Length: 210
Image 1 (tube, rainbow, N blue to C red):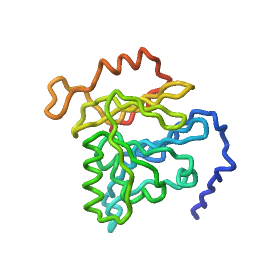
Image 2: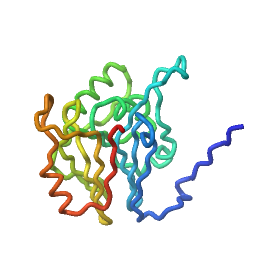
Image 3: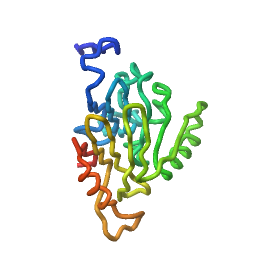
Image 4: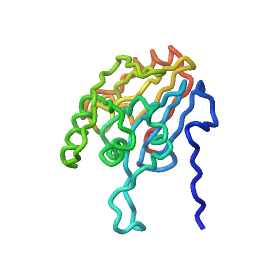
């Protein structure tokens, strides 16, 4: 018999508000359903919200969605959802799950444009606040400051995220490659990554398939 899940009420947190914590809700040790959380000083930041696709053992199922119950219980302390790029495994769950969170969504220009098209095709009847963010500009979210760094990938405008806190900086890579002769977009901004390395990085979270 399956054991019932035992959720922790936000008032019974087992970590301090000041701790810098990384919580993957999907995408770790699996392909797709990328959802990652960062916590610091009582606030949360979400990176990506993607779907996965069923295999032959799941007849009648169209898409697989991540379980957001953990952060849905803490949605009043979630500052933003930031999308690294516009592939389904990183942003495809937004139309299905955004109502659990109801937070502003941020992404680069192409990512937000494709999300708007996706939402229009879904014919959803709620309005999601969406904001375009630029490369090499720092944006403040409560206890976090976030900068996007240009990457190269198989879709326009992918971004790595530099998540800065008083306890240290984290680089969340997103999907990336190095390509000195790219057929799409520009090569990964190696110089900016070097500068961020010189600034000091507490941890790098690698979020690239395989």
